[in-house]
Length: 75
Image 1 (cartoon, rainbow, N blue to C red):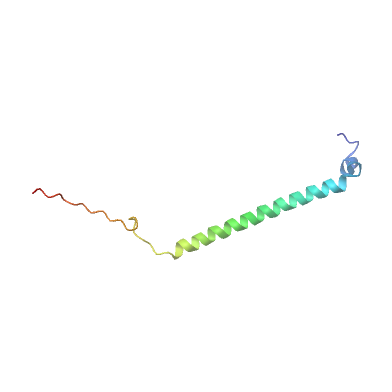
Image 2: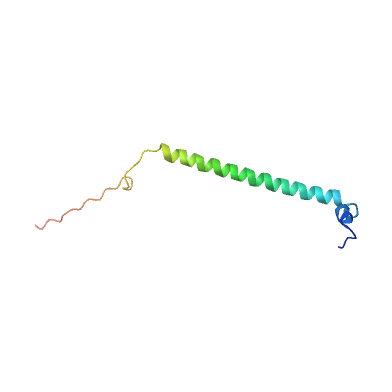
């Protein structure tokens, strides 16, 4: 589709207001979605940092497992 001028491109034979409104709403929603996603990501990371900071430091052994060497008896 070729247009004679920039004004004709904006008007788009009468369809311009609909087309440009759709583009505006699309980019507005994409911007809001990106902002909301980043905000939620920061909230999750902050929550995990708070949880990690509040838990006591444990030893590195697996829970409930203790390994001791047992010497076999030679009877």
